Image 1 (tube, rainbow, N blue to C red):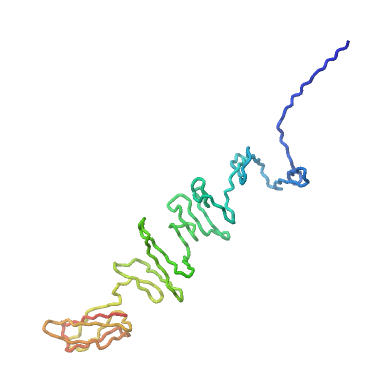
Image 2 (cartoon, rainbow, N blue to C red):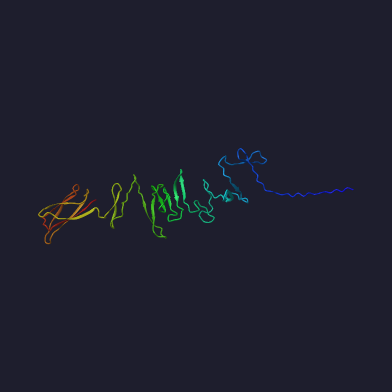
Length: 297
């Protein structure tokens, strides 16, 4: 009797990871296709490629998230899911504006300046670098020297109502202010301030017809002096050491020894020669004096 011996050969299934290349030798394109005839393709540049690898996230993301590079080690980049916290060009719906946790803002999150530009040139800069100028805003300048530094002219326009430049009172609880406001004008007016502070206290600003302002005494249009007459003269021509304007007024008085009375009068004011003429009732002596005052309009 013949016996049959059946030998069982056990074959162990071993899964070995392999690296699969999906490529085109001519285009460097990986084509992905399902049952549809159309494909989705990934293509590398035709030249200048440096080898690198990209590691996908280990889990699926959430709706609205995007893939961003989380870290780079050598030539390997690890992707991670990140919230798409970008600003749309047509505006964003803000949940909570601010720089706190969970709030949204437009700007730099590190110690770098925020720069706004147009036509490829910088126009506005907010200083973010740590230092004494941090938070300063520069318009037309990359190095603002104050909280707001504008290089150029500043115009306070209006919509029919006068605009004002306001200076708040130096009081934390204060609400009052001092303001400058332009009046209704037929032409532009420019005032040029003095180049230095007033040399003494009590001076005031005056301006020429061109708007050039200078520091002057409050009595700048009032000048006075003492005239020493020629002994024995009735008429006295007094030279005024400044411009006597049309419409100026003059006042005089005679200083003389006690016991005598002298009459006097102003007979002429000459604006062209800057003089006044005084007549006295008697000839003046060597100790007599004429005190004068001229007031310009």
